Length: 107
Image (cartoon, rainbow, N blue to C red; front, side):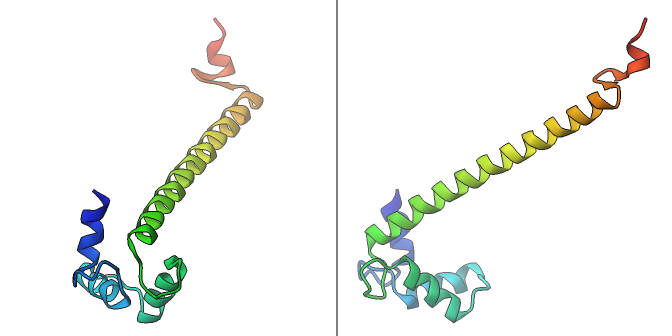
């Protein structure tokens, strides 16, 4: 449940996730982001300029993150498939077949 996750970040139960909340979570999980990077992240995700994330900001962040991750996975799959196709084409051009060399397929 997204609100349960939100509440983990909103450890002071204010209904929003503040800079201090993000710093606390970063400290707990051992994140390596600097305070400046945390502030920049907050500023980027904050849609109404109040320097806090409300549940809608948080939901938007999660959905966008999932979409970006899925797009990246698809890009990597296409990249791998293209590499396999290029390798198969190169083997075909050099007389190689799946079962070995062209000479081994003659009987």
